[in-house]
Length: 125
Image 1 (tube, rainbow, N blue to C red):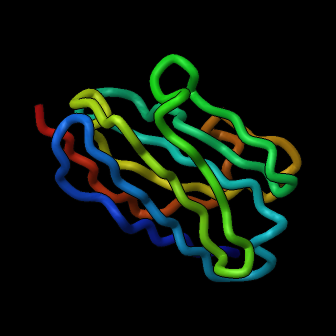
Image 2 (cartoon, one colour):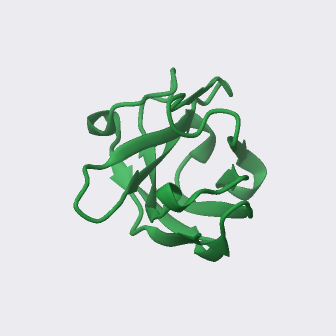
């Protein structure tokens, strides 16, 4: 079992940056694959980025590639999402998730076993 707590969301102007953090408690954080998803009002949950336990990463190339970077610090049991050049369409609740397998970065939300409560990101134009 692992508990996930996101932080770092907020209100930012278009073109600005935010860094989201997701702190994990529980066993063996380094063995989990981690992912970030987002959900805007009235829209389906969308994959943002993922990182495997072997540090392979994957991004939603259509929407965030080149602007967002996922990373992890196993010593701190934390995964990060650095978001640069933010756009109003990035506005959403951002969720982190943990995948028990962790072998490859997963882009399907159904592959994840644990979820955080989410943090709101609002980008003003």
